[in-house]
Length: 173
Image 1 (cartoon, rainbow, N blue to C red):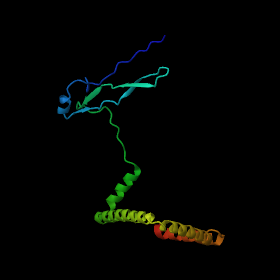
Image 2: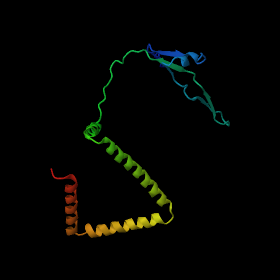
Image 3: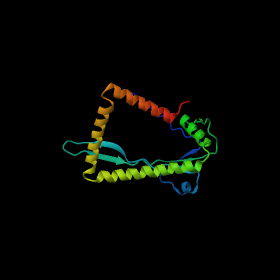
Image 4: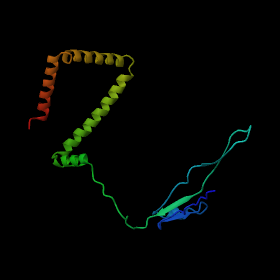
């Protein structure tokens, strides 16, 4: 038969175990102490007998743990670097001269997005409108595909137009 050995629980110098029946007034009095809640009910045994229903017995384990800050610095603190996109955004924000105007545009854009979402959800609640708009979208998609994507000269013209618009927006550098 194999014997099982249990390893003792190691507790750091800044942790204290508290008896469940002990007074909690000392834990509440100190602002440096943190107490953890008791664990939920645990299933302790399942017993069945022939012809009898399943009997589930549970008991509550009373363990309270309290830790206290000792004021010692941690041994090794890992420094976390900001992601590259955050650095890029910070650099771009530092280059902006009129931060008030940019902030106002961002807030106005957020309000417009919120308002348009409310408007669309209101239209969606109407009984006939969403179906009609869906049919209009399907019809326009079919017309666009026939007009610009089916034949090769039309596709080439569309690609050239997209490239010209891209160059206008980005600019030639």
